[in-house]
Length: 461
Length: 62
Image 1 (tube, each protein chain N blue to C red):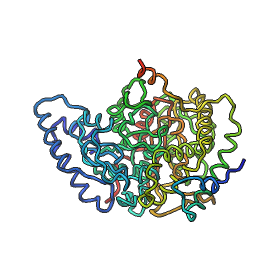
Image 2: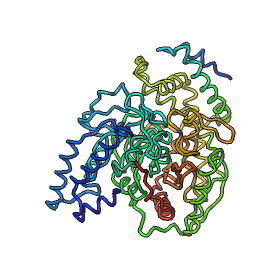
Image 3: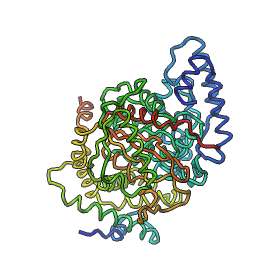
Image 4: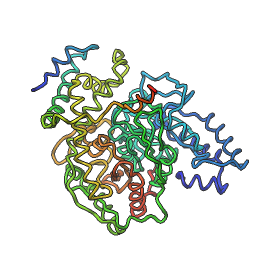
C-alpha cells in the first residue's frame, strides 16, 4: 500500500498500525540481505510506536496525516538515540542527541520510522555502491545500481518495504535514484525544507525531499516536512501552501516547456521517446506544449561541480588524515575539492548568479519544464562509463547531466516514471518549476501519472 | 592562465599520494576547460550568489 492507501485503511480501521509496521519489517527481513537498502533497522522501537499509535487512534486522539504509517529516512538525517552513519566509516559510531527537523516533523505527523536507509558514502556519489555497508541493488535488476546518493531510500520504496523514505539531493541524489528505481522523487525549492540536523555535504546545494510510489504521496509528505525553521539560516519564510493536487486533477491551459536544446542531446532514444510521449499526453489533457531554448545546462553543471567539490571538501577536510577510512571514489572527489583555489569557488558563485538571472525570464513563457531525469536506465553495478552517441562519459557525469544544474538554481523538480527502456528498466521524466511552485509541478506530475498509468507496475522480487 | 594542479597539490597537507594525483589533476583540468570561459566573461560588478545573512546577524546583536 502507498501512503494514501495506508492512511485510508487506518482511518477505516481496515488495518492497524501494528499490522502495517509488522508487514514493513517482514518485507525488510525477507529482502534486505540481497537489496542492502538499510543500514539500521529499529524493529522494537517501531513496534512499540505502532502499539502506541493504535491506542491513540482507538482513544479518539486527533491523528496527523502520517499517523501510524511506517516510513524510513536516509542515514544522513540525525535521529535521537539511533546511530547516524552518513554511510561512512568515519561516523560509524555516531549516535545523535537530537532529531533533525525533518525527523521531528515526521514524528509530529505520526509517522513511525522503521529504519535508516543506505546511501552512497557521505551522500557523495550516484551509485550507492557503499564500501562500508554494502551495495544497494536495484529491485528492477539486481545487477544494476539503484542510483544515488539516496539509493537505499529509492530501493526501499520500490521494493515495497516502506511507502515513503526521505532523501537529500545535492546534485540529483533524490531524482536520479527515483528514476532508476521506477518511483517518484521530489526535490523541493532551496529553503523549502529545513536542513537542520542533516550532515551537510554542500551548504548551498543540499535539498531535502521524499521518495514515494506516487506523486500524491510526495505532495502529502511535502506538506508535512515543509516550512520555516529558524535553526536553518537558509530556511525560507515563504508560506506553505496546499500541495495535494485537486481530484480530479486538471492541467488545462498550463504551459509546459519542452527544451529543444541540451536536455534531449546524448541520451538513450527510449528515454527521449518516453518523455516526448508524456508531453503528448499532457497536450491531450489540455496543456500547451511550448518548444523552447533553455540556458546552457552544461555551464550550470560545471558551476555546480566546482561549488560542490569546494564546499564538500571544506566540510570533510578535518577527517582527511584518515584516508584509509574513505572509499576511493569519495576520497578522489575530496582531493579534487582541496585543490580548487578560493578564487575559483567565489567566481563560480558569481557565475551562478548570472545563470540564475539568465534562467528567470523563462518563467514568463512557461509554467514548468519537462525533461528526461537521466539519459539512460540504471547502469550495471561496477560499470564505469556510458557510451552515448559514440561519446564515452563517466557514469557519474552522464547520470547527473540533466539534474545537477537544477540544484545550482535552487528550483523545485520532480521525477516520476514515464516508461521502460529496451531492457525493461524504468525511465524517469523531470518536471522543473519556478521557485516555490511545488504545487504546480505536483499538479502536472499527478496528471501525467494518471495518464501514463504506470504505478501498478512493480518489480518482481 | 592555465593552472598546474600537480604544483598546487604539492602545497597541501595531508598530501595526495603520487599515484592518485594523476587522476585528480586530469579531472580538474577538464573542469577548468569548461569553467575558464565562464570566469572570463564575468562582469566586475557581479556579486557571488551567496551573501552574508545580515538580517540574522542583526537580530542576534539586538
